[in-house]
Length: 215
Length: 306
Image (cartoon, rainbow over all chains, first blue to last red; front, top):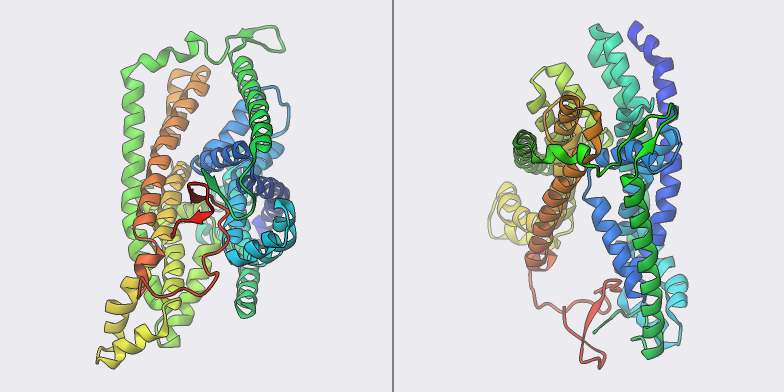
C-alpha cells in the first residue's frame, strides 16, 4: 500500500496533464473536424476533394508518427513551441478526421425525405444543412463523438513518448521506482484512466438509449 | 455527373466560380507544400554558427542506397505484419467469445463479462501492452499480441453484440420453433448473420490494430517505428528525417491497401447481404440523406437504386 501513496502525487500530476491534453485536443479536434465534415458534404468539388484527402491521409498514419512529425519536423519548419503544445497539435490533427467521419455518418443517418422536403420548400444548401439536417444529425452524432473522445483519452498516453509528462509516462517512472509492486502501480494507473473513460462511455450509452426512444 | 440531395446541380456560372476557387485553393496548397519543401531543403544555421545541410541533401539521403537499411525495414514490416496477423486472429476469436458471454442467458456470466469488457475498452492499449509485458513477462512479441488482441477483441465483441441485438426477433423465435436448442440457435442462426452484418466494422477495427502495432515500441519490439529508432542510432541522427519519411510511406502503403480491401469487402457483404429478405420493402425514407454523392443518370434527376 505504501507504493500507492508514493506514486499518488506523480500520478495526479500526470492525470492533470492528460486532462489538459484531452481538453485542448478535444476542442481543437472538434472544431477542425466539424469544418472538415462540412467540407466533405459541400457543393464545391475541390473542398470535398481536400477533405477526403485530409481524412484518408491522417486516418492511415499511426499516431506515433503524427506526433513524431510534430515533435521533430515542425521545429525544423520554424516553430519554437514546447513539446506539450506540439503533442496537443498532433493529437488534434490525428483526432479531427475521426470527428469528421462521425459527423458525416450522423448526417448520412438523417432520413433523405427530410433533406428533400427542405429542398422542395425552396431552402438552399446552407439552410437545408444548418436548419434541417444538422439539428437532427446532432443527436445521433453524440454517441460516436463521445467514442472518439474516449479514444482520444487513451491516445494521450502515446504523447508520453515525446517528453510530455502525462499519466502513462508517470506510470513508466512509477514501475521503475516500485519494482516490487508493479501490478498494483499499473492497476492504479488503469483505474485513473477508467475514471475518465467509463463515465464518458455511460453518458454515450444513456444518450444512445434516449435517441433510440425518440425515433 | 453527380449530385447530392443537399444542393442543385451547379449551373455554368457556379461551376466557373468553383473552378476558379479550386484553382486558387490548389495554388495556395501547392504554395504551402513548396514552402515546406524549400524550408526542409534549405541548409540551417544554428545558434553557434554551425551550418547543417538541408533535409534533402545527399549527405542525408545517401543511406537509401544501402541494402542493409532496406533489409532492416523489410524486417520491420515482416515483424509488424507478424504481430498484426496473429493479434487480428486472436482479437476476432476473443471478440466472438466476449459476444457470446455478453449475451448469455445467465446473468452470472453476463454481468461480469460486461464489467470486464468495460474495463478493457477503457484502458489505453499502451498501458495494456506494458502491463502484459511487465506482469506476465512473456517477451515483447507476445506482450504486443496479447495487449492488442484483448483490447481490439473487446471492441469487436461489443460490435458483435450490437449485431446480434439488432437482428429481428423472429430469427431467434424461428430457430427455437423448429426445435433447435438456444445454443444451436445462437450459433447457427443469429451469430452468422450478426457477423456478416458487422464485418465492415470488424475490418475497420483490424485496420486500427495494424496501426496500433506501432505502440509495441514501448516494449522494444522491432516493428517499423522501432526500426526507425534503431537505424537512427546506428547511422546517426542526421538521417532521422529520411528514415521517418521512409517509415511514413511504408505505413501509408500498408494501411491504405488494407483500408481498400476493407472497403471492397464492406461493399460486397455489407449489412444488405445480411438482411433476411433482400427485396423486402424498406420503410419510406430509410435510406438516409446521402452526404456522399449520389450517382445521377443523364442529369435528369433519376437516382440509381442503391
